[in-house]
Image (tube, rainbow, N blue to C red; front, side, top):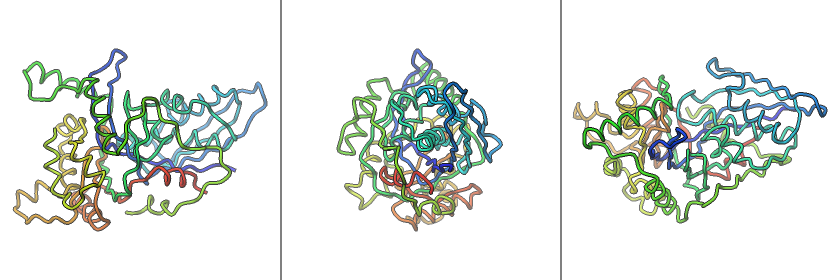
Length: 378
């Protein structure tokens, strides 16, 4: 019988980009957080006789998702079978609910879900899952940890952080796609142009600055980043997993100056981990290049925050209801998110974003224990 896996999404609470490396990649420091929003990945696998070639097929409901070896789910299954020396016939189906090129890690999450499903189907133990995941994509390893995760290197070196409290979240999904490679190119170009002009933009954080940020972020959680990659927490070969009421929720709940910009919504939350993170000046460097290309995304962020530029121009009274604790672009976009102190505030923000003509989904952050408890959809 096939295995259905909830392929959860992520947001980047903060993302700092370092200068391009000799291998063409940029070092990053980022804080990932998993969300209850998810795709569904179904894996049906059976072992073949020794010597038979493995067979992989992939189907999906989304026309823009590749159904061959370009797909991360296909690649991780192919590499897992090769690494373990197991021959199998594997059918994967990806039921897409999350946006493609949305900054929510959907493709990477699909790969992690396919690996989890494959292991359960074949009762398969796989050594070095994190390293295998990193070969497939920089964001894939975080989905083998879940919850709050510190990412360094290309984002693939992951350390589990103590979880944030469950927090209401609104994800805005504009009808545009942002290319991550192009966003990195634009970042490099902008930094070079500003450097040539003599300033105006903080230069890309050097590696020691990225390391400093990782320690700052980790210290907010009362810990320190791991010196080695985190062990994934799946305990993946299990007999049964509990089902979750969060499935219905997924499907239908319907520079440092940023600190002061968003800080007014944080009164009375002293000691809250999220508040402490905001006070560090946490932000997403991609906003500096993505927002000028897509001004609509900046406006959506204002709607999420409850500080609409239109409202200010029209002189509407300031209404503190529905203001975000924090709002940002996720990854390179185009999805944005806001975090809220209550369901009422989140729903108010959702309505603002929808009134602007953008899809907005109400969800919650997903702590690590719940992430693994609800992974398999029985």
